[in-house]
Image 1 (cartoon, rainbow, N blue to C red):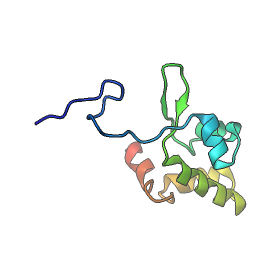
Image 2 (cartoon, rainbow, N blue to C red):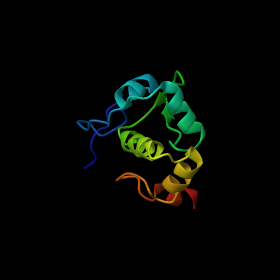
Image 3 (cartoon, rainbow, N blue to C red):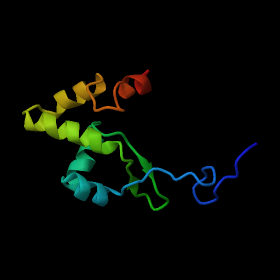
Length: 105
């Protein structure tokens, strides 16, 4: 038996979609600037994300782990190019490990 889909979310009725954060909300919650988030996206440290009809970026909760990993590596003095290589090689937070390799194949 198929479950009815919620018209607003496109998900099965009763299923709550994961939260999504606009860039300003993400920046405040993560303690970094909006510009840093945009820079990390341009440099490939954070993946491009879905956008609203108004072209606003919407980030999922998984990006918090990635931002924390970036902050730790930056605090250790690693350059952004090294961080990008490490994240692409699978040295990412839990739930992200190896995703860059899979997507690039």
